[in-house]
Image 1 (cartoon, rainbow, N blue to C red):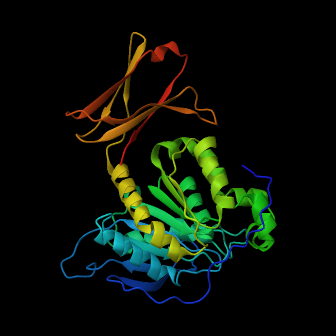
Image 2: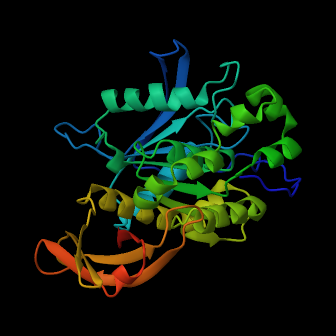
Amino acid sequence: MKFSMTWLIALVTFAGTLPLLALNGTVQPLTFTGPVLGNTVRFSLYLPPGYASPGNTNRYPVVYHLHGIGGSSGGQQTNQVPANHELAVAAGLIEPCLIVFPDGYNNSMWADSVSMAKPAETDVMQQLIPHVDENYRTLGTRSRRAITGFSMGGFGAAKFAAKFPDTFAACVIYDGALHTWTTLNANHPDIVAEIFNGSEAAFNQFSPWTWTTTNAMQLRAEMRFRQVVAALTVYGRPWRDFVRVTNAIAEPYIETGLPHSLGPILDAEGTNSWHYLAQAFAAASAPPLTPVVLPGGTNVSLTWPSVPDERFDVRRAASLAAPVVWQTLVTNWPASATTTTEFTHTNALLAPTGFYHIERKP
């Protein structure tokens, strides 16, 4: 999807070195030789406190955090993100996680450049994720893996989540530079030339706009997005409308009014984001919500697996053709005391067609 507006917003991060925050865990810069491309793959890795303790065999969820333009796998993010995570763990909002900081080759938009001189997507998907799962005690499943990113990294996080919904359970976008082809040309013709060789078709292969449309049905059912916006409202608001309205995908959206700087954004909304990821992990690990649909007169009875104390939203759409319009039939419907929950949609069969979506509430 394209927008005709032209925005002259530079993607910059705040310069200078901030004091390091105290960490209980450890962060290491690491490299390995990629088995697919034979290149040197760089990343930094946060291990939570106690990871290396004798006798500790615990396995951990993994969060991949993507840097902004001009960044690398190192820098202040490798202190700011873990420190904020440790605050959330101490508050009981999420369990300890491994945090991986990939290298996006400074300005790749987290794509594979046409020349493959900067293979950021291949590094993450085909080389780094397998390497981390093979060499560290991760839980190693989609239901315990999430992706987050700041600025250009927000673009990348949205792309990875939309393009690879079988790999990630959730995505948090921090003041994302959610460029369309039009806005990238207007603001970063150097990236258009170097990474995409001037080709819109090449850009589309790595665009969250393209892949959200392509995988909308699966994303609607399985992916958790959260968007925290600071200065880049000119990108955040169109993306919000594209996700929520055009593709009917639920996405919490928060505007902070803060500058385009990761530290203050994490201070304001980081712990809420960690809690959101914890909820996403729990939802993705729960039994799938595959309802049994039974007609009865003009009514439809929906039955699905549940456990006591769960609650659900039930929605219906007349068609799955975009833009999908979901009607909320009931919100916070309580689970029954048994292993299944039932909801009856009265007079449902008076309509020619109907599609149902059941969402487990956090």
